[in-house]
Image 1 (cartoon, rainbow, N blue to C red):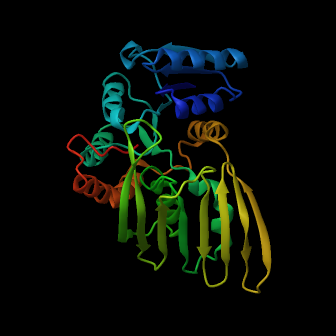
Image 2: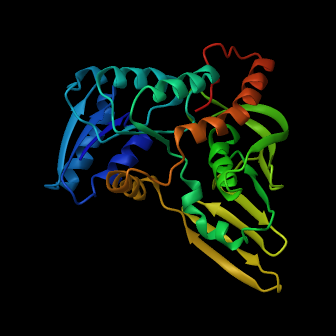
Length: 323
């Protein structure tokens, strides 16, 4: 199998960690303009030293041989350069499968542009919104015929950069029925962890046309452990837990009033990517949402973010400063 990772910062590096442990022969093409990132990847590959791995390193897509047949390409750059990288890659090579990181782009116009762009090519495009597959245990506690209310709350958990994970989970639990934004209350803009990007303090409300509701609430308090509160309520089940690092810890109460403890593991990216790769190789599909599904989810909140940044003096002609 032939795999390319374009952008090997923190997330790209985690993708590589996982891929290198696939016990099948593979050629991996690593592309990053940062020499430091490439050296870090080289050190990782050397530490594993597997006969299954043939690793190649490049500082730009231009250096890739156009005759390469790519089974899977992962673009793990930040959102501001992703559009340019996709165009550059497809001008040389059309991968069979493309995996994109969220948030997809900084420009709203790019969302629609690439919806049409990908229709012209035969590769399938997926977005790395993995939460639904990681919390199936919680989803399965709710009877399929029951309406539910999902509340995500906490301090500075990334309303801009992480909402799309929870919207994907909500969308999946609502059986992919149409969802809409029903309200929002933005209070402030703060600097994000990644230099040059920002986050919004506030809340977003959404609902499905089947009557399910979603509340995303990120306040401005300090949050050193980066925990997120998850409350999921239906007529017969009440679930309350905290997501900290790689753990969901809490409890649920069933219809009889019986309280049961919850302690579930959330896998790191370095423990997930190889599973997605093997799914795509073996079945031509995976549990990540398609580009079209993710596109529709991004369009729910991108206009809201764009308008709020404009109202607060940001020039959004070149994109919203979120990633």
